[in-house]
Length: 603
Image 1 (tube, rainbow, N blue to C red):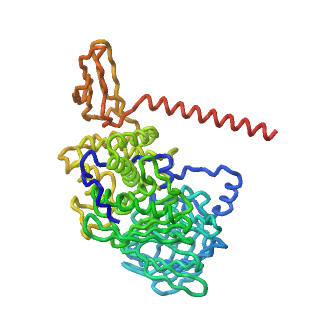
Image 2: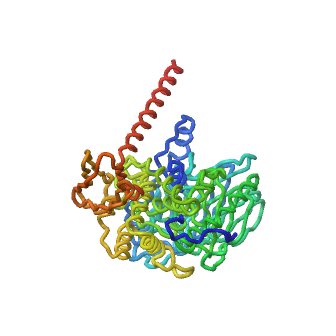
Image 3: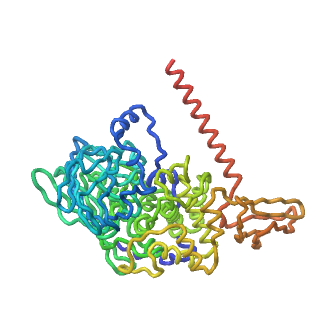
């Protein structure tokens, strides 16, 4: 699957899609979506009412019993009963506690019936554990320290995702031909919706064995490498194994009457990577076309960012009944094989970007989710620039620019749950995508390509010279990224991040012009310094100003002055704000008309 005709000049400015951003956010996770129909709301209530607020939250401050607790190994044995929408699960977990303790917990949705629990082979009495709110609390008969084994067997009907991936849980669907088609998507709510985990970014497991038993006419695709497929009593068991840290919410079950496309990719770095695409059989012709997009995407990422992080496992895709999700080594894909105007499938590309930004690099606190979504979103304009040049790049960035909210800072520097980040009523919401992308564009323009991509590699891999085998998945945050940028540039760019990341309002450029002169100055929230180079084009001739104080230049009435002609600086733009107000007015008018129709219909 190597495409030798690809342009190799990926580090130049001319190398390098934005996206229909509203659709993009749908692909990852936004807990703001609502179920509108009364039937949908009723089904939602009946199927997930028992799931507690604790289980529907992912991240934030860890409960006391989990502090100092980590998980190095998990064996998960799932048996699915599609007709009943239920599962039976047997698990063995290797945990480690930093200090001796007799009180521990893991997270598991309370909708399940706990059949038995044992610690180091010793069966516990049911009085020694409880799960009233989704935190499975266990009182050990003997204190433990260091490594110990926890085995949990349970069964029941997992929370059903009425509208995956916005609403987390199991997505129980049927294919167009009436066969079972099942997927999990739990980014917003977390791994505890179907397996016992530490529902925190740091809860990643070093190695996992995932066994999925399904009716024999179905195929189960999951994370890592397929070890075996066995058949017994009309059932098939698929054994998958991971060999590196995997995001907890990215552990996924994908089940359907799948066909399989397989190939291998000869990496830019010399290693060979297995590529697998699990698709509905009736979609095989379209899936073959999509399959051909994978190699050029891999070329782009490997050359611009660095090695595909999980080459010893696979680059995997599974067709799902929901739009998509960045499930590590088995990305969920449900975009109906739609290429955009730039000739590629933006959703496949965006979820693929998360293998670097989200899976290889994971934020150590969901408060820094922009490192996943901002970088992931910026990769599409870069890829479009690589394919089609600067006009397409700027066009995609402008699409992103129109969506900004700027109500909350992208980062608050405190422990947050996923909901607190994605919900725009209480957090930055969609700004972690589009604003994050545009901040990175401005940073790249400020420090140049060499420094920008070096800092990005250092953030992602922990080294500026990544090679297969010399890096491992890592955790980071915004503060480390700032330190990396400062080290590489030899400058203190804290002011840049203070303005763009740690406060909400965009810089506003105040311009006063008459027939003889023009005066410019920045209006910055909290009066922070903002010494960013500002380009002006005056009759086609460029000059650069640093507005550390108001600056006045001589211009005549007939002079053509273009401020920031190459759109390097993310700033407040009144024309966009007016346009957004107009769209909001139209939305309200449409909603009022619809309400009037409903009132008349009821009468």
